Amino acid sequence: MKKSVILSGLLALSMFGLMGMGGNKEEAPRQAVGIVQTVQVYEQSKLAKVATERLEKLQDEAMAKLDAMQKEMSAAEEAKDDVKKQRLQVEMQQQLYSMQGALEAEQQKVLKVLQEAMQKVIGQCRAEKGMTVVFEAGSALSYDQAVDITSEVVTRLDQEKVDFGPLPSLEPAPAPEQNAAADNAADAAKAPARGAEEKPESADAAPAPAEKPAEAPAAAPEVAPAN
Image (cartoon, rainbow, N blue to C red; front, side):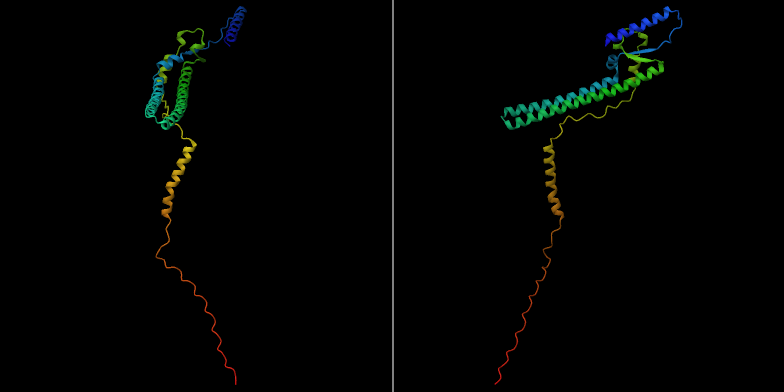
């Protein structure tokens, strides 16, 4: 890639040389170019330091949690409590996985916010100075220090109002079976309340009268035989 870029540059210089040899005295319009040292920006910017301290705080919180779990596991080993030790091992693995994901996500978010703020500031400097393009210092083979706008970018970047948002939680997400158990417990707690709300039938209510059985028809009178 670098080789092709160098060859392209040499070809362009050769073309300009040939144009000069042809007697063309008109100079091409000069294009203003800017240079920014992004490493220096990250090192000197107060905003970048705030971002670094934010990540360090999150890392310290993660280490404190792990140290506490490690001490608890050591106590379980001394007490020869294998059940608790096994449970703590599983919890520590879940905690490590959750912490790693949270730290990586936070680092990417902070870096994205910084890059967007830096791009905004560099764009403003380029427009105000009438520059055609701004390069990162590492991609330039040689340049005049007069086109280096790093200090101005640092100053403007520190004036930006940037919100990194709240710190993420380091606690692992509950497992599906834990969610189901919690739901079942909540339903069980609500069941007595629902039963209490149902009004029982009053004990004082008189029972419905039983139906009176039908009376048998009266027997016919006996008739005396005639003499």
